[in-house]
Image 1 (cartoon, rainbow, N blue to C red):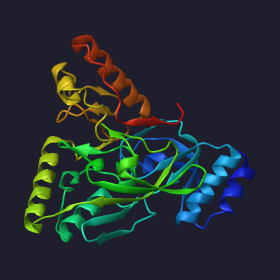
Image 2: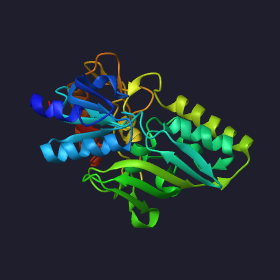
Image 3: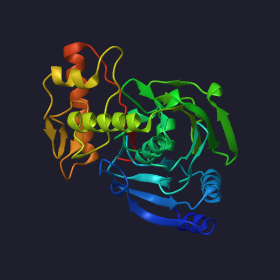
Image 4: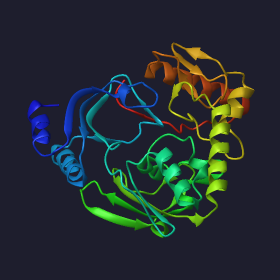
Length: 301
């Protein structure tokens, strides 16, 4: 990217701007080449200015929250990465409605709901990422999903305009939402139910223990690699074709859970993508099922 474009963006915002920032530092996988520009906005105006810059300079951008559910290729990202992890941290309770900023970690949201005696978010315990990413991808586990309790979501559209969508104006399906492409989530509001704080904390603890027992939380990963096919589980299919423990470079299919690829230390995106192709080919050959990626792969080879 031309030096003039880079300097123009830095002059427009209050937050930090970094050039050639390695994305492996900002993803749960610990994998990824450099971003041309990474912006750490300080607030709404910085985000709007960044979107305006990208539109006028015709520069692609990537919205990055907690960095989970993301595989950045080894060549990095040619454009602007908008790092939302430290912005919009607000968290408040009004009666039985929770107002959560897009940058709020899901672990913090669960703990806050527990303290308020509000039930419905216990299934989120142990899931990495932020509210913004969870809403955009309709994160789910244990039969629940983020859309179940969503009341409304406040967005910045790619043009920089602010808009509020009610739940009724949006469509959600398995790991998908109808939020406009290129939008930035600012805040999400959730309607929950009163519950016994002791019982809520018990369910949170149980979910954490179960997740730690079944998933390779001790290793870096992007979470579930594949979407579960209708009526089945991707992890079960990987185990059925005897691929658990298969390794390419430092990328390894977890011996604990077949739907996780873990980084044993120095895995590259090339390793992970090669392993993904092995799984998809073997599962299709043996079962006829086409496994679809849940993790988002972005960037240059």
